[in-house]
Image 1 (cartoon, helix red, strand yellow):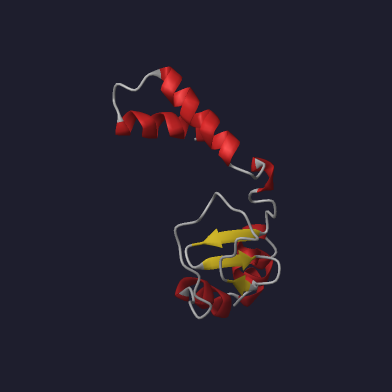
Image 2 (spheres, helix red, strand yellow):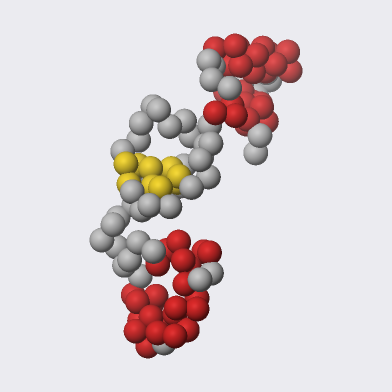
Length: 115
């Protein structure tokens, strides 16, 4: 959902009879008082903003949230370095050749590279 539409919905929740001109004014105030260009948010596609910090999927490095990395999108999960997926581990031990081939696929490779 685009930001302006979200603001329209939130304004209607606060005041169901809100006039369009008031909503437009709210949007303009937010634009004027937001000192950062929206293109600066979530610039690095390899950094995942998680509930408890930032995960660099290239290196596996996990950092605390910081005002230096601007992000609008946050995944509703917490990072746990010690967590394992029993089904994936079982698959890797039972079918090592197939597991190696699957690891070459981008989605699974990302998961397996930190194990």
